[in-house]
Length: 106
Length: 464
Ligand SMILES: Cc1cc2nc3c(=O)[nH]c(=O)nc-3n(C[C@H](O)[C@H](O)[C@H](O)COP(=O)(O)OP(=O)(O)OC[C@H]3O[C@@H](n4cnc5c(N)ncnc54)[C@H](O)[C@@H]3O)c2cc1C
Ligand code: FES
Image (cartoon, rainbow over all chains, first blue to last red; front, side):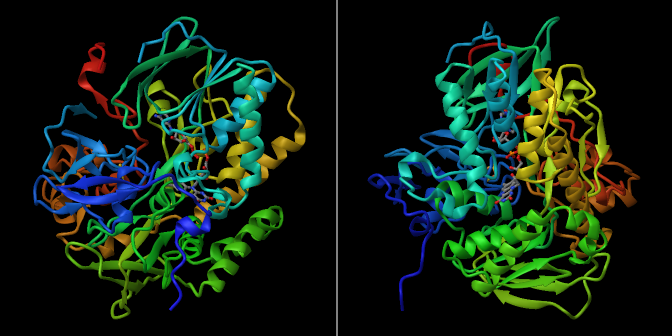
């Protein structure tokens, strides 16, 4: 079978060197410029948070910063919208459980 | 980042999508000093999202249609930036606009997620070009990972070059679905079916509007050809009424709908997939406008839009609006309206042809909005245990109980009784659904105290 076309092929992307990030200690590869959510999707990970009440898994939903389903703890800081925050080499992402000690008002 | 209250311009444009971009470059062309403030790192808005520079995309336009219209404006933007007539405040999330005697002050938090610092810019005129977000209607299983917004999937694909799965069902209503399905398929996903809850008959009832908008027809035909080429089936009058899988999507059930979007019993068909991209049109982002007291009107798709005059002025003196804030209408209309607003703000005479183009595109937008407006029967997709509010995990059953048992009649009361809409997203995702379940014929215009989340310290006026 021929290899599937990928989004990278379609725009003829020649990304800078890939780098490592970690999700709950597990190493994953990200491309420069990708948001944390994009890097997780690329690794086949669709959820990285559990809900406060029922502990249900969640990940990125709206993709543009309005739903807050993609909240993650990034380098120890909770409540980061993974769809907005760019991935950086060495980032450690931790599955965020519950409300992650919200310090924001909405 | 320093606070910069001394930054005074002739115009602050909030939003660098098609509307804001066109307004900024046109106004700068007339000699105005413009501040272009946008939450994203690069201009383009929701439609013209591009891969980050680090991804080295040689052909970003491969994931877009009408890229040229955008490239023309960004070239002008670059020239105006170099000439110092436009300043682009990227990664600035505006959370409030306030009035002093002679100016508007636009307050923003900075950084990708708004946590880096804050900034203020001032001007006698403000243009609200904040666009829209997707409208979501709940159904059993819509919180399962792998269910993503249709526009969201599009945005993540365009900016991050990623897909949520390999076999992706596209569902909901509105013309965006066709664009999304086409792009996902072009990028390598298998799209077994697009389920559109409405039919396409609504368009046929407005033949003159269609005939006056040949480019829109060509655009539609273009999508149809793309879908055909990728073997994507389009099913109208159908909706996803269940998602199967607990920790991630394994399949969905697509059910036929009657004219009122009630599911037709016994017509459910299970379709294996690993992701679902879903959305029911767009909702204008009006928080900043309603906080300023700008008047709103009900749009034919059941959303609220700003009341605007012929020059794109809102009902508040000095506050202008263009693009989706005046009613969802697409990027071409947004470009035209942004330009028109700039003419008005700079007191320049407008070519009649530009105004006619806006009116023609607005009429098309109305036809489209009416054709895809949600019909009341969608509440028949819900089970008692279906979550309606994703943030606070409030089920349809609890909302119905608040309405029938406790007498709630509107979104506000339902919210107080159940917490639906009180979580992180402040009802952006569940608002339209809660309003409907509360028996309101349409949702109330958005009223949120802040347009984006702000660290408490910011509100207290401290450095965050
Ligand atoms: C997720 C999504 C995906 C879409 N995909 C497509 C598509 O593929 N094809 C298509 O034809 N149409 C698409 N649309 C519709 C398309 O976005 C609009 O038709 C068009 O872009 C409207 O232009 P605009 O300038 O009015 O608003 P937008 O393009 O939405 O631009 C609004 C801008 O305002 C900024 N903004 C909003 N609020 C704030 C704030 N408080 N502070 C600072 N900045 C702010 C946003 O960051 C954004 O850049 C999509 C819409 C959404 C919501
Ligand atoms: S996916 Fe909605 S906020 Fe990030």
